[in-house]
Length: 449
Image (cartoon, rainbow, N blue to C red):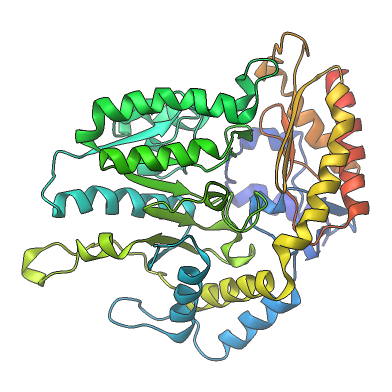
């Protein structure tokens, strides 16, 4: 079988995510036969460097032997069991490990299936906590402009990227949206920290005005990933934690995309030395192998649900595959790699190499900004560098970068006109240099065609 055969079979029966399927009349579907490390191989023998970790999930490479072995061993013992009234060793061990490695005070773990589901759990837990605590007037959520928290209805409601949200707005609950700390808009010469601190005044004002009716503030710590990889300083998180405490409002940290080392620390909240009331995790949790998410919260919140059955205070939220044993085994193996190989320390060399590669782009006539937080590097492509005038979205310049890069054997999937690197941590410096060169040539191709 070759690529064309599989592509034809695919297009006859499948509907792919986040895709205008009509594009595939002229954009070939790429069937992948195998993966190894940072490389994917199709059925025609072409190889592609996975620069985006297959939608940000794969952190230790495809076909990682340690994760493979853990899943194979688990498969011989238990694949899955109902997680209501039953439990299993792997699920217990993973929860213990997550409590150990996440910020202090997060002592209870609730499993779900994916990032959006984790956000739904956190929203419902926060709302339900206040209901159980005798404050039923607290029903609102505060979110940041340009935020993204998933595409199920609750998660979509607390996001603010119009591309995903606008179509479904009539179906969504009302939320309070606050202008954000996106440092792309800072004044010339203004530091990330100063701008982030200045922008927090807008959040402080809204919290003071609405605290009595607000359950929680939900935030993506340090990087708004789906919002064009926009970044801000950790001081904003510190100020927000203090303000939420002052006004008796929960803080939900959505680290689905930025957790597990993406920002340079195991969890982004560590850089502000804060603990949220709810921490949402997924994506890298299983090393990119299997769907799993977790919501970490405090014993104080847990106790608000703990009562006699007749009180009807239980958290009645479930997924059929909650605590799936195979997924938990992959997650345990993933955390094991972090701890056994001191990944956070070893990634510093890769972070420095990415920064070195980035310097070339700062002077490009069609790059407005190059920004980096840990293992995430973003390059903002614009029509006019000096005015920051964007290319018309209809021109799909980012798509031109994507197609050019594929022809060079690199999987880059820009967000609009933002080209970004979010590679697996097993990437080499030589492979990073290849990414940099292909991105450079891809931008040149896109702005001239």
